[in-house]
Image (tube, rainbow, N blue to C red; front, top):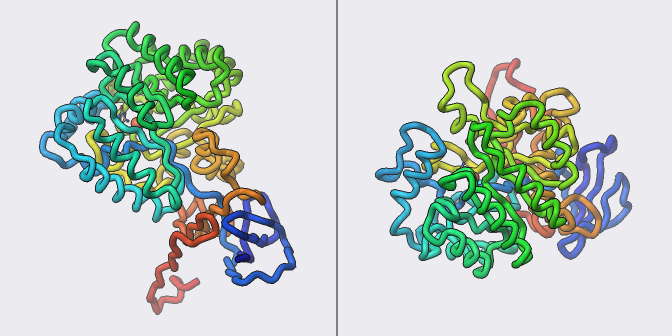
Length: 418
Ligand code: 17E
Ligand code: FE2
């Protein structure tokens, strides 16, 4: 059955556009399609963009921040890992799924249709991974989920960590994870990066490492990850998450590494709300922001995107799956607010995330691709970002996942009326 959306505003198009959908796919997009569809929806000039992508979240950790013993008093990454380690025992597949479902609901109701989640595999029972694999299968028609086999407590710092990561890949995880800056010595961090690349090649998986999530400017695992994946020809299938230390690196070092990052086509994920909160904790004043060089990476044409990372877990007490909030924080912290940057800011939570997830062939508003999109309550990208606008509609394979009416306001005051 054909369905036609009319009066859509699209990024970089001056005229209102029509969007024709048939059989779950976009069949045509243009100003005057001159077709009679079985059903027509007037979008009243609202902005249509591809769905939000959250390429980095820990769905197995969500809503555990208030648990007995989980409180992170120092607000540091390392205490977060310790508190998680002390409180993670005893989880069941059903309990993890229950929490993950709640987070998925929050994210989806704010326009997310693509999620890459980490699953902690430093747990011989593999409870997190089992839960998230089941959830991925259950939701596959309405939400794309990728799973990272992630050794939260280290490939080598945790007994058999590397074997557990490999086991996770055999069980069906999509990406190899790692956390080199958490290993007990630099040499083990390096060994874990080598191992991650070796496993990715062996099992034909993507790579997404928690890499250099520290203010220590001597933490330089990004350099090794880039070199190894470049030499294997899999840089574009590789993601460096966090890379906070790159924000503390000296200019001469960054200048040189930047060249290799471009050659390797590496992807970057920054989690602005978490890292502005977790980093800078050993600084007095001046206090560093703790984020990687998002602006400079983006200016160099390197693929960089933003992600939520946490919803109420031992690392971060807030978070609600609202990628617009993450974006708003990110562009402030990274000083990406020239008018052209604001006009393109939505890329950081849409198309750039899709490139990171390596799903660009099926993602975007193009004829022939799945008819997945969201409608924002704004008539331009600038207004959407300025007003941190909400999502009015989320469409997946041509079907409405939800429609939200803007809440009515009662007032007699002329000044408050449009
Ligand atoms: N685990 C980690 O290593 N780093 C983080 N930012 C979170 C979990 C949220
Ligand atoms: Fe993370």
